[in-house]
Image (tube, rainbow, N blue to C red; front, side, top):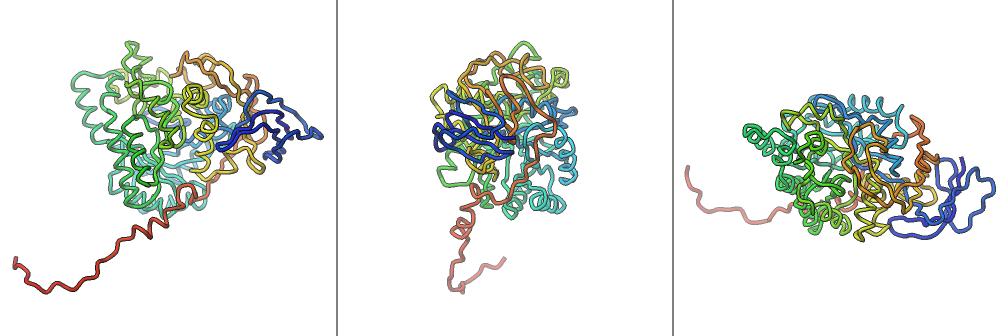
Amino acid sequence: MSLLIKGGTVVNDDHEFVADVRVLGELIVEVGKDLKEDGVERVIDATGKYVIPGGIDTHTHMQLPFMGTKSIDDYNHGTRAAVAGGTTMLLDFVIPSKGASLLKAYDQWRSWADPNVNCDYSFHCAVTWWSEEVAKDMEILVKERGVNSFKIFMAYKGLFMLRDDEIYEVFCKCKELGALAQVHAENGDVIDIQQKKLLKMGITGPEGHVMCRPADVEGEATNRAIMIADQVNTPVYIVHVMSKEAADVLARNRAEGKVCFGEPIAAGLGTDGTNCWSHDWRHASAYVMGPPLRPDVTVKTHLMKALAAGSLACVGTDNCTFNADQKALGKDDFSKIPNGVNGIEDRMSVVWEKGVKSGILSRQQFVAVTSTTAAKIFNLYPKKGRIAVGSDADIVIWEDSKRTISKDTHHHAVDFNVFEGMDVHGVAHTTISRGKVVWENNTLKTTNGHGKYIPRPAFSPYCFSKIDVRDVERAPKKVKRDPYTGPVIQL
């Protein structure tokens, strides 16, 4: 298939200019002014619109087995929702249960995804326990399966949580393999105690979920994760940054030269945790996720400004959706409410509305935080995250146009939307995945299995380029001194 996108304003993370874009097969083959239409199968007029790299959602959980059920957005529904919102690649998580093989879990997740994805995807893998077997699995995943990022949990005690000494060992293995260490940063021990305390007091509703996981619990764990990574001297990526405290920890550590990255999510930028105090249990439970949405309504602006300042890197969603009857598993105990919210369809529009339309982000910064920086961090760039010759033809024609977000019109399988009723003024007019139009004029044109698994090489230069130098500069040095020859106390 050959396409010619005419007259749009091409926006990359570092430059914007009016140009035509020619696509042949799955690649961009020409970018320039007044390109000829000869032999082109289809011409798309993008006059007055922006031509941007397809979005990359760095954090999703499609059909995740979790808390006794499975997230309702499968790989078909999730990727349909993605392309409808301008996202053309997602980074999903393989999460084996404690004691299970990482390789077998990877194979299981691939069998779910490959026949159903409507856009490209890749996998992070969680390390939920530690042993030599896990270390060997990690090596095979990096060298033979194209996985270059591993996530550990500091929360979910007894389920996924690792001790600090285990975290240190995982980080060492990540450094050896050139894989990025990722962290769910909350103090799981404190949460466990606080949960029991609140339930004993009779606080069983969704508000209890927020109360037992205050912002300091996230801030402390974020600092601890960065400290451990810095001791190992390996890059670390903090997933779903949800508080001022965690964002400020990242800002301070980055200013000190530590190699750390932070990921806010669409929900944290577009809504807040006051909803968990709603008298409607269903409404309140829909907003339960971990770390929680904060009841401080100023957090979302703080996080957006942190993105603009560069102390936070790129925007994911933690898209992990559960219907009302699934959330109701915790109707009498907030600790049993399946954690998760939507976001993959509305991520780009929410960032545009709360970032660009508010004057906090430029259009180029918007492209950076929704696509390009993720491509650089996870070693996909410049195949992904850029409009340029040789890049994959994952392209979005973006327009300033109003849309009202609603569960009645979204493409998720879930029966609720945490952005319900929000007016946004930036939408994907046309989404192109691998050179194929998959969304146009509010209509999906997807094909199951169209998307491909994208292997990612180890040692992303964006993350690892200064690690070797830091190893040399920070190497412990022995002090040369004469032996001590004085008296020694007798014990």
